[in-house]
Image (tube, rainbow, N blue to C red; front, side, top):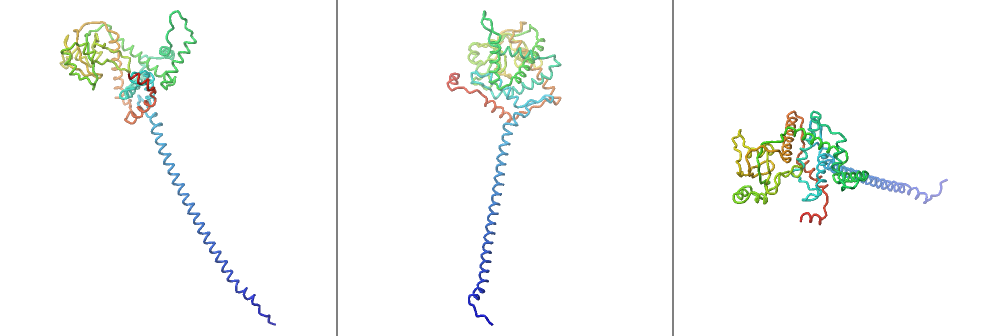
Length: 398
C-alpha cells in the first residue's frame, strides 16, 4: 500500500547535496588559506635565512677586517724580522725595546721627557743591533768572555746608591734594598725585564773588551798638530761662508763662542772635543778621518796640509762642517784621553765595517726596514713617551 507523501523527507533529500557542496567549498577555501599561510611562512623563513646569511657574512667580514688590522698592527710588526746575521734574527719588537731603554734614560732630557730623535735613533739602533750580533758571534775567536759575575758587577756599578759620607758605616741590607729599588725603577721606566737588560749589559761589556783589545795598538805618543775649530750643523741657520768672512776681522775664539756647535753625539759617551771658545788641543792623524787631509795633507791626491796659523775654508764631514785654525806644525805629543777615546772609536768603527762587509759578501747579512716598519717603530716609541705636566714642560722650555 503506498505510503502517503511526506514533504519534509523530500526537502531533506534535496538539501543534503547542497550542504555537502557547502562543506566541500568551505574545506576548499580553508585549504587555500592554509596553503597561502604556509607559503607566507615559507617566504618569511626564506627571508629570515637570507637575512641571517647576509648578517653572518657581514659579521665575518667585519671580524676579518678587524683581525687583519690587528694582525698587521699589533701581531705582525713586533715579530717581523729587523735583521739577521748568519741566520740569527732579531725582531722589530727587539728594536723598539732597545730604543725604550734610551727613552727611559732620557727622562730628564732638556727637549722633553724621554726625548728621542726619530730621524736618527731607529736607524742607529738597528745598526747597533747588527754590530752587537756580529761581536757576539766573533767573541770566542777574539777571546772575549763575559760571565754572570761580570754582569752583576756592572749592574751594581750602574745602580748602587751613592757612597755614604765618610765616617758612616753602610748597612749592607739597606744598600742592597736601595740597589734593588733603583734597578727595578729603571726596568719599570724602560719596560724591560731583568733578563732582557742583562743581555744588553753583556753586549756593552763585550764592546768594552773589544775596545780594550784594539786600543793596545795605539801608541801613547804620536805626531800631532794643535788646533781650534768651529763646528756647524748641516742645514743650520748659520752660513759657513759668512762665518769664514767674520774670521777675517774678528777673533777666532769670539766667533767660535758665538756660533760653534759642540762635537760629539748625544747618544754616545763621546767627549765634546772643543771647549766653548773652540779650542781643541793636540790632534793626531786618524782621530778625525774627515779632517786628516786638511790637517796633514794627502800626497796621493796632491793635497797640501793647512799651514801653521792659517784658517781653513769650511770642510764638510759626516758629522758637520768645520772651520779649522791650525796653531802649530807637526810635533810629537802625548796622547790625551779624549783623543785616545776618539782614535779607539775609529778603530771600533773600522772593525765593525770590515765585519759587516764580510758577512754581506758571504750572503749572511739581512736587513728588513721599510717605511711601514719605520712608521710602526716611531708610533710605538711615541706611545711610551713619558707624560710631562704642563707647568713642568713650561719650566723646561723656559
